[in-house]
Image (cartoon, rainbow, N blue to C red; front, top):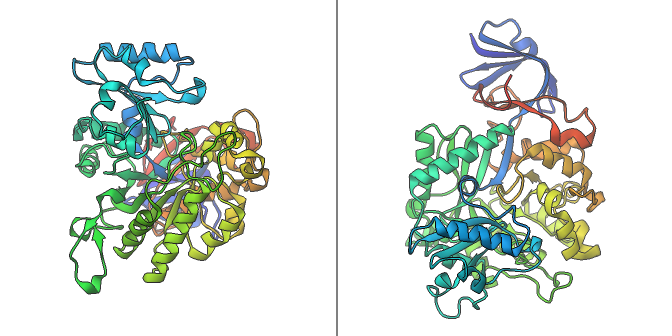
Length: 524
């Protein structure tokens, strides 16, 4: 007997052998058949979907769940439109902070203010508290003098804005979050994902200096699962900061590893260890993405996170230790470094099935596309970056480079796996809004950025289903509505392939199913 039979729907399976179905049967959390294969079977529950469209559950291959949940519960300056308004919000947060404590705020973005704040301005409203104001990009922060005084001499120039490693040093001064705080935050973010039809995601870096929240952070995800706060599948990328030298057997050829040789693939179907996350540069929002030519109107090219040889050695060592690599590279200079290092790693120890990934691939020159293809490297992009920040990004790249931002068609035409993701909470997390942008290439203001990089609706949906599963090594169990795979699916109020493209982002997520059980959405 089936546990559930879903009927009267348009199932877009993303399986080329059977692209459309009308019924789907579930038993023990798995899809057991479609249409005539299940129509005559008894079922404990029959759900009439009343003509709705059903897709495989979306996979967001690059998110920050803990950061998302913590951000939602932290005072924010995002609504502020002036320096005075930001300072007033900081003063209010400082007034609620115990003496000697940290006033933590989020939502800082200097672009809307016309300039950065200064440490002196924060000093005037901090009432002696230490102030840490997180930049929305995640690659910088504003702090006051009380924090600067705790940092090593020469680390910061005194203006109060810290980027990349300097920010990491300031973060390390704060007390870590407890596992309970983190588990609660992870749960909040996971339920937000479910409401948007996401059934699986890759947490993009735990335990590192930039985005780590606790030295025992992995345990917080286990706790969230134990307490029923992890209602979707989560794959954890581990920061390369955690690699350390090991005295392994010469035959293993492993110079650095995590304790006990832990690597990609460990875990179960709900919580597992994924790729090793390596940061090579910063972000465009903070102007720290590493470019081969200066930003338009500025006299610098961003920055790498470390000297090139150190970064290369980390990437090579991760490959030698058996990891899938997720290399954060936004600017084209960083992409060059990532591809060079991955090529060196594969030359030293060929692993054709490694499925290494470049996270973001924000600015990719035409000459770099062939190298992605030759190395079999996937591009994990965030389309909503251009939807919401595209006007700014296009301006700082200039007319020649703007069409190369967060490519779509260029990757696909070169046979490169194009994977969709959000980088939540940096940008909106909705896969449907991202799908709309991938087709239209239009920012929120209506500016079209790189129209030749537009893809079809089918291709955009594949980036969030089939390709996402492939990038996470889940293709045998997720990504399509195929018998034998997990019954993870999303029920939509309309068909993305039948409505006007401009309406795709507003399609209602009626229900989200994980293991055949309804767990999210607006409700059937």
